[in-house]
Length: 95
Image 1: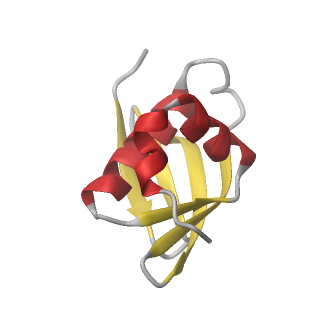
Image 2: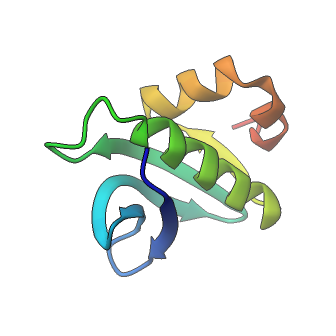
Protein backbone atom coordinates (compact mmCIF):
# COMPACT_ATOMS: atom_id res chain seq x y z
CA UNK A 1 0.00 0.00 0.00
CA UNK A 2 1.30 3.43 -0.92
CA UNK A 3 2.10 6.08 1.65
CA UNK A 4 -0.66 8.67 1.91
CA UNK A 5 -1.21 12.12 3.36
CA UNK A 6 -4.39 13.91 4.30
CA UNK A 7 -5.03 17.53 3.41
CA UNK A 8 -7.94 19.84 4.03
CA UNK A 9 -9.36 21.61 0.99
CA UNK A 10 -11.62 24.21 2.66
CA UNK A 11 -12.57 25.84 -0.65
CA UNK A 12 -14.31 22.60 -1.65
CA UNK A 13 -15.29 21.65 1.93
CA UNK A 14 -13.52 18.34 1.77
CA UNK A 15 -10.54 16.44 3.06
CA UNK A 16 -8.44 14.76 0.40
CA UNK A 17 -6.31 11.64 0.70
CA UNK A 18 -3.21 11.99 -1.47
CA UNK A 19 -1.05 9.15 -2.82
CA UNK A 20 1.82 9.81 -5.24
CA UNK A 21 0.66 13.40 -5.65
CA UNK A 22 -2.84 12.37 -6.73
CA UNK A 23 -6.15 12.65 -4.90
CA UNK A 24 -7.34 9.07 -4.33
CA UNK A 25 -10.16 9.69 -1.88
CA UNK A 26 -12.31 12.49 -0.50
CA UNK A 27 -14.45 13.16 2.56
CA UNK A 28 -16.90 16.03 2.11
CA UNK A 29 -17.92 17.96 5.19
CA UNK A 30 -19.72 20.97 6.58
CA UNK A 31 -18.94 22.84 9.78
CA UNK A 32 -21.54 23.64 12.41
CA UNK A 33 -20.23 25.30 15.59
CA UNK A 34 -17.46 22.99 16.88
CA UNK A 35 -18.82 19.95 15.01
CA UNK A 36 -17.76 18.57 11.64
CA UNK A 37 -20.62 16.99 9.73
CA UNK A 38 -19.19 14.22 7.54
CA UNK A 39 -21.45 14.19 4.51
CA UNK A 40 -19.91 11.88 1.91
CA UNK A 41 -16.80 9.71 1.60
CA UNK A 42 -15.56 8.39 -1.70
CA UNK A 43 -12.54 6.55 -3.05
CA UNK A 44 -12.05 7.83 -6.58
CA UNK A 45 -12.43 5.47 -9.56
CA UNK A 46 -9.42 3.27 -10.18
CA UNK A 47 -8.38 3.39 -6.52
CA UNK A 48 -10.99 1.10 -4.99
CA UNK A 49 -9.96 -2.01 -3.08
CA UNK A 50 -6.57 -0.63 -2.02
CA UNK A 51 -7.45 0.29 1.56
CA UNK A 52 -7.69 4.01 0.85
CA UNK A 53 -11.15 4.35 2.38
CA UNK A 54 -9.94 3.04 5.73
CA UNK A 55 -6.79 5.19 5.56
CA UNK A 56 -8.91 8.24 4.82
CA UNK A 57 -11.27 7.52 7.72
CA UNK A 58 -8.46 6.83 10.20
CA UNK A 59 -6.36 9.85 9.25
CA UNK A 60 -9.37 12.16 9.19
CA UNK A 61 -10.72 11.02 12.55
CA UNK A 62 -7.25 11.25 14.10
CA UNK A 63 -6.93 14.81 12.76
CA UNK A 64 -10.36 15.80 14.08
CA UNK A 65 -9.50 14.32 17.48
CA UNK A 66 -6.26 16.32 17.50
CA UNK A 67 -8.29 19.48 16.72
CA UNK A 68 -10.74 18.57 19.51
CA UNK A 69 -13.66 18.63 17.06
CA UNK A 70 -16.89 16.76 17.48
CA UNK A 71 -18.15 14.60 14.63
CA UNK A 72 -21.58 14.03 13.13
CA UNK A 73 -21.15 11.06 10.75
CA UNK A 74 -23.98 11.50 8.24
CA UNK A 75 -22.04 9.40 5.73
CA UNK A 76 -22.79 5.67 6.10
CA UNK A 77 -19.15 4.72 5.53
CA UNK A 78 -17.85 7.00 8.30
CA UNK A 79 -20.64 5.96 10.68
CA UNK A 80 -19.78 2.31 10.05
CA UNK A 81 -16.06 2.93 10.47
CA UNK A 82 -16.63 4.60 13.85
CA UNK A 83 -18.91 1.75 14.92
CA UNK A 84 -16.16 -0.79 14.04
CA UNK A 85 -13.48 1.33 15.77
CA UNK A 86 -14.94 2.38 19.13
CA UNK A 87 -11.82 4.41 20.00
CA UNK A 88 -13.40 7.15 17.85
CA UNK A 89 -16.79 7.09 19.63
CA UNK A 90 -15.63 9.90 21.94
CA UNK A 91 -15.66 12.22 18.92
CA UNK A 92 -19.40 11.82 18.39
CA UNK A 93 -21.67 14.68 19.27
CA UNK A 94 -25.10 14.12 20.76
CA UNK A 95 -26.84 15.80 17.78
